[in-house]
Length: 88
Image 1: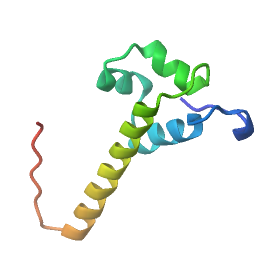
Image 2: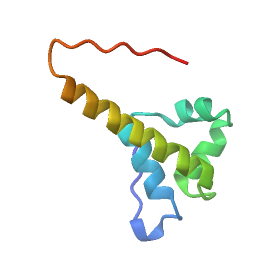
Image 3: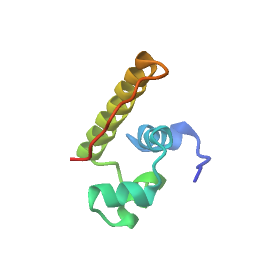
Image 4: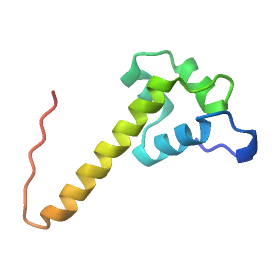
């Protein structure tokens, strides 16, 4: 879902929040499940009805860094290299 809203009208952290979701390829419902919060909470953050909580912003920053590290490591590994990932 895309939002067309002047940046000057966005709440603190809202633009960062929306960009993070887009970069990670996460939907609002996927984030709600990951954080164990109601989808209405995530929607309120996305629309600017309520500010994005600091811990949520920190979580998204960590996820973005992890994605960057994974992308960097895959690019460095090159073709023919296999990487095994395990879910913990």
